[in-house]
Image 1 (cartoon, rainbow, N blue to C red):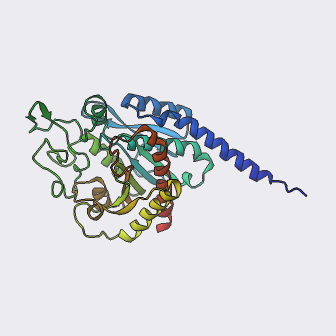
Image 2 (cartoon, one colour; image 1 turned 90 degrees about the vertical axis):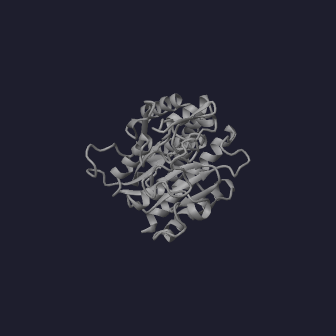
Image 3 (cartoon, one colour; image 1 turned 30 degrees about the vertical axis):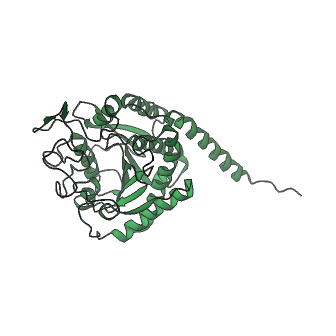
Length: 341
């Protein structure tokens, strides 16, 4: 006696295979790192391919006049703030530090994943997803053309100086935020250091643009994640002090969900904890400001692969495996956040 497979089961299985093939076809170009221009062209092609799902928005320009883009999925950018957008918002940013190329690739993979599965996944449809795949475009291009390990922006502070045969320029965009700016783990006066906090908070147009869009949606942001590399750890506020914040228990559940999802996906072990306790003191960071000043309770950093063997220069063969991990973690964290309240 044979048992037939229900028609609905076959249909869902066929749909899953089709979506999987489609996702693979769109990520085939992402197994290599891409320049700023290649990224922009790729995003425009995705917007055309997924018309009605992906909406490409312009947030402003960098110091060197490159356009900053935000990808919206599930909803267009509204004309007036806080009007006509009932969905909860999830914001993901990447590439805030120039040399962390893997974060940019992972954000692009996430965009493809969301666009591919959005219409068939009721959970994804609950949210207005906003992804900024490359925040520090000037520094990123400089890391391609001149210095692979460049970290900062490319602005020229008023007290710029010459050190040896190089000009000291740029600000650490993850020390340039307005909460406890310039206090710990930063330099306020030495422009030449990698952790120069800038002449004043939000001096960098890239930081101001990212802050502005999160503030625009602040009442609706359910989850914010900033992708960084490297260390294989998920981090919560605070960076400026060791004291636990008032939401640390909920945040621990969300971080653990991400860590568990990565373990189930690749077998890799990620850790989790606050910036201060799990890594080092760092004031003026994005998630401290977003938590304290903007009131977003679920705001995190994911430090992607690896733990130091390759460091910032992660081989291209690691891109797609890291993509799978980061997507799994972000979706799991979103699900846990939606259960947290």
